[in-house]
Image (cartoon, rainbow, N blue to C red; front, top):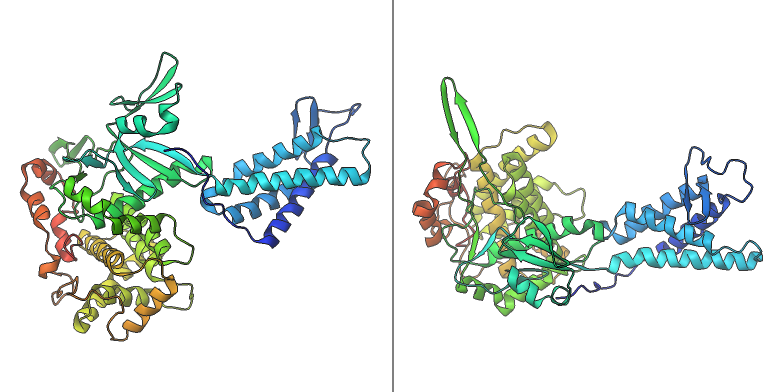
Length: 509
C-alpha cells in the first residue's frame, strides 16, 4: 500500500472566484503592513499583531485580518469538514502572504505589481484546494478484530485489518523506509535502533486509507474504522462466543480498553472490589473471512466508503458509524442518542416540515415487517423510545433503561442489515425515502425481504420480539454459557445481554 491522491473534488466556479478575490485582498492587506527600512518603531505591531520572517517584518492590517477570515471560512466550506482544518488554512494564508512580500519588487509598475499579486493569489487558492484531494495511509493499533484460525487481511472498503508483520512486508513505503518501522508486541513504546524509529504495535493493526487534512487524520481514520466495524458485524454470521452482543459495551477499536477498571464499592459497612472483565472481540475464522471476501460484500463495502453525496450508500455509511459509536458508549443515554442518530441519518430527508418522530417510527416498522398489525406495534414501541430520546435531548434527563436502549440497538441493527441485504446502495436516497413513505400507508415495501419477515410478533406490551428469527443463533447461545465468558457475565454492568430479548436479534434476521 502507498499513500495516494484521493479522487479530485470539483468546486463551484463562483465560489472559486470569491476565494480568489479574498486571496488578492490578503496579499494587498499584507503588503500594506510591510515594515519599511527606517520605520521608527519596527517592532510595534499594534493591537492586530504582526510577523517577522527572514529579513522581513509586517504588521497585520484590518484588510489582511478580514480577508484571511473570509478566505478561511469559504475554503473550509468548499473543502468540507474532513479536509478542512482551519488553523492549517490560516497558516497557508500567512505563508503565501510572506512569500508575496519576499517576491515583491518596489520598483515594479502597477501592471507588474497587480500581476505578481494575482499570481500569489492563484497559488494560495491552488494550495488550499489541493487539501481536498489528499489521501494518507494511517496505521493504528487493532484491539477489536482477532484472528481465529484465519490470519489473512480483512479488507472493508478503505479499512483493512491485518497482522503487523504483514503490514511491514506489504506496505511499500514501510518496506523501503529505513527510518521508520513497526515493532510487533511492543505497544505503545517508541524506540530507536540502528537509526530506525521502531513504533510499537500490537499483533494486529488497522491500515486505513484516509482522504482528509493531515491534522484530521486521527479523527477521520477512527470514523472509517467505526463504519467498517458495523459493516463487518452485520455482514458476518457464525461469530464466536466472544462476539459483542446486544447491550454489551464494545471496546474502543484502537486503544487497549479495560471495560471494568479496578474499583472499590462501599455498601454501608460492606466493601467489595473487582475489576476484571473479559473484553468482547470479533473473532474472524475462515468462514467469516470468506463471507467478508465475497465479491458482492466487497462491492457493497466499496460503495459505502466512496459514496456520492446523494446516494443511499452515503446515508448507510453515516448510520453504520453511529451504530458503532453507540455500542462503544458506557452511558445508556449516549447509546440511545447514537442509535437514534444512526436511524435519522438513514430515514430522514431534507423536508424540515416532516414530523421526525412519526417518520422514523413508521419507516422502522416498514423495514422490519410487512405484517400490518406488527407494524403498528413496532411503530408504537419506536415512538415511545423516541419520547425518551426527546427527554434526554430537550430536558437533559438520563432516565434510560437498559431494556429500552437494547431494544433500540436491535431495531437499528436489523434496519441496517435489511437495507444492506435488500437495497441497491447506488440509488438516490430520495428514492429510498419515497419507497418507505408509500409503504407506510399499508402497502408492501418495494424492497421487502421476499422469503420472510426479519421480525416476529411483539408481545402485548410492545417490548418482547420473541419470534424464531429474533432468537440468538448458536454462537449467541454459547456466549451465555461458555466458560471463557463466565467471568465477564459475573461482572457485567446493568445492560445485561439478556435484555436484548426486548428487541430483534440482527444476527439471525
